[in-house]
Image 1: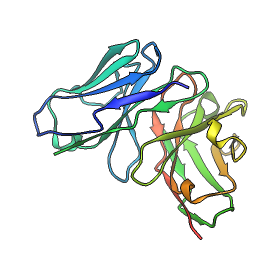
Image 2: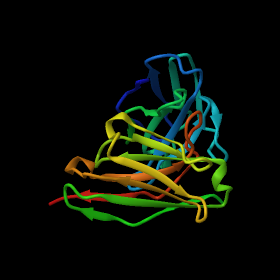
Image 3: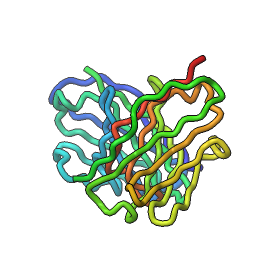
Image 4: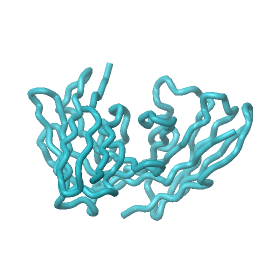
Length: 107
Length: 118
């Protein structure tokens, strides 16, 4: 199975900060990577897919990049509503999905 | 608009079974697969498996093989996830999501809390 390692597991930031979260796959996943945002008590929400494609309706301050085994999610200017937990997910495997362990963004 | 609406919270004793439903609307049900993801209290997301709404083909996480069954009813656009021989560590919120192999989860159900306790 493909393993996904996310870092950091948590971070403290302030409104207006630039935030970067990293996700590393145990093997190349050819940009088959999605990012989700989850707020407490809510279902995850898709932010990006194919590593860098923004889902419709998601603010442009969210962006994704990377290739091979290393990918990043960047929030260019953190807003109050962005305090949440973020997960990466690989869908390269034809058999399984794997999620990273999550990154909690807090004040 | 696409919606996935799940059944309500359940409480079960160890050794029992639970069946969670996920009713889809706003799209052609048979054009997509449905995946199930669970989240134990305070923990991350864990993929459980998927079912094709087109032909009923399934693929399950190895850890759950033999205890889980995922099905669909195309007449009602509803997906089901049944988990048997429940243990306390099956206590979690269970989510259905649209999408399966080779794709991402673009829509999610609201989640169903399953509590396993004696």
